[in-house]
Length: 175
Image (cartoon, rainbow, N blue to C red; front, side):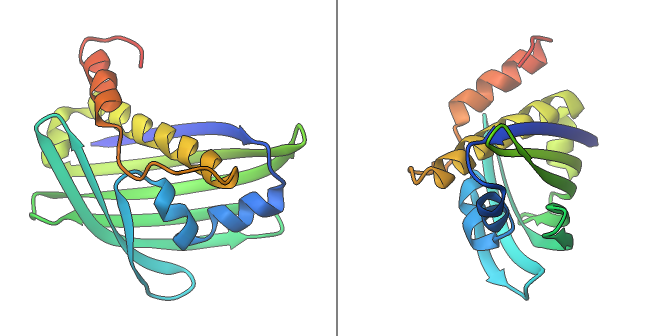
């Protein structure tokens, strides 16, 4: 099952500060709901875990994320992630393209993620997986903005809001 998610958001911070934050695994991992950094392999590769729970389904993935490209001059990056369900019931792969541009006195962040899910979560269908992934990404954006502003970051996934998003998706509503 494949899903593509494209998002653009604006932060009221200089591009250099946003770039330094978004390309630092130690800083960015706390913005991803349910994620933890388990090992820095080298400057471009790191290991981690992501645990998500929505409804009766709980999934925990362990995997590797790699910077394929990280160009500070153009503020563009490409990342690849690959993870396996710790119970051996599937896996997920992600390819991410990101670009930062100066805009309106701050920074515009544009991200496109291609996500492939196999196993148990893929059974829910692309609409529900896309809705859940979109919700996780929206919470990431909120956490990222709070981190840049020096505010608290919510590391846990907001499951109630995710369930609402998924239910809307099941019945064809907009999320």
